[in-house]
Length: 362
Image (cartoon, rainbow, N blue to C red; front, side, top):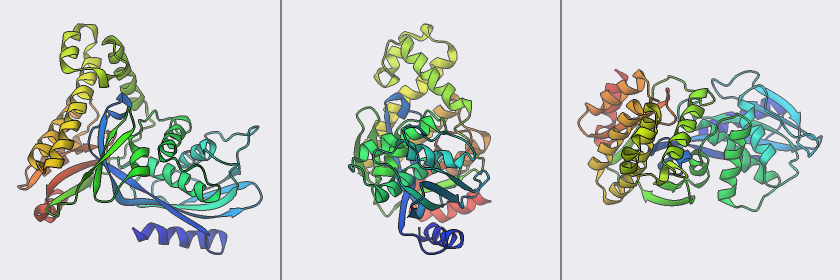
């Protein structure tokens, strides 16, 4: 975890001279189960990762903000400068794209006025890997601003402000999961988040015999594309056809009873969400009981549902899941994140983790 911090400090010294006064970090996350349920007011079960986004920086007095990123894969230029926001001159999205995640947070920060500053961003969360590099950057930016001009410290409102930033600047209509786990993540625990009430319940992941393996397909996904918005609209259309506020309120029986009210695609999208919400609640209970076999079975069901009903997997993700499931000691495996690339997450016995890594690399 020290590597991004060391890199950020080195680049700050090279770019601005002197050492930074402030240093903050925010984690990436992997979602164990509960995919595309957050914007349907359902349950998710993510955990924070030791992959982090670090921001180091110092205040400046001329009303300007200068951001530098060292992130591999970020669009150019890697350095951007702009005026601090005011009522008459709010910040607006623009290029480079990576800066919009921080700009959105600066614009929607819940205290202020935000002073000028220089900052360097470094990260070990892979961009486009489905491990929430965007929320990690947003929450790190918010945490940095809290050091410059403190807000009221409300952690839920912090997550909501970061979500609003992603909606309005990069233009991704994401649910609350990524920002919430980046703010609330607890070491040694997964967090069952009720995305309607915003209640979070920690579930221990401290069994030394259990490991979580994340595998990057190296197929980069871009959630700012139209597919994510399309899925969300299809879910909203399905909820309306079922006379529900959201798919969280629907059961499988109700979906089957009103199947003729939905087109085939919306039916499949709704079937994924409704069954995934049920699976996530069951998985949290299985984790609490130490029933890793059941948890693994639910992960595989989740992947198949994402593959066939939600249609957000890709051949590389399917292949990674298939390889993992052939290895003795693997409980379950699935794609994680928005889909169309990114990573898989595998629950397995610690004793077979190295063997699993070798087999997947081969």
